[in-house]
Length: 132
Image (tube, rainbow, N blue to C red):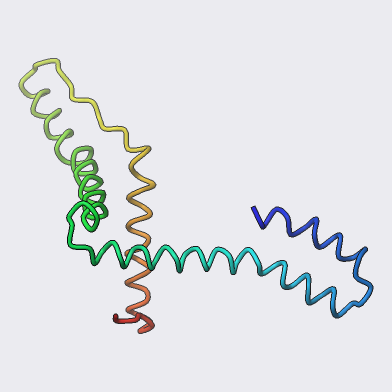
């Protein structure tokens, strides 16, 4: 939302601030505001993630692995189990076919989880990870 406000605010600065250096500094501050805000949100979420992962209750610490396993089961169903089941049903000439699982709602979750894992691997390769 902040990103959509930057352009109009910068245009107002042209009219309201006569000092060129001050105007450039304010424009820069406004332009980086959205990035700083996003960074702060990510940092806050990382702190929440650490707290959840350290929790002793399976219902608090276990929901992320559960999401991962559900995604794995969905992928396994679509790419292994259902095709082999359909091949078997076709060989048996039953005329029945098992429908595929709709992955449209699951794939963004899986890609997000894999992307976060990929970023962690990238950090380790670049040797910039923090061990806590």
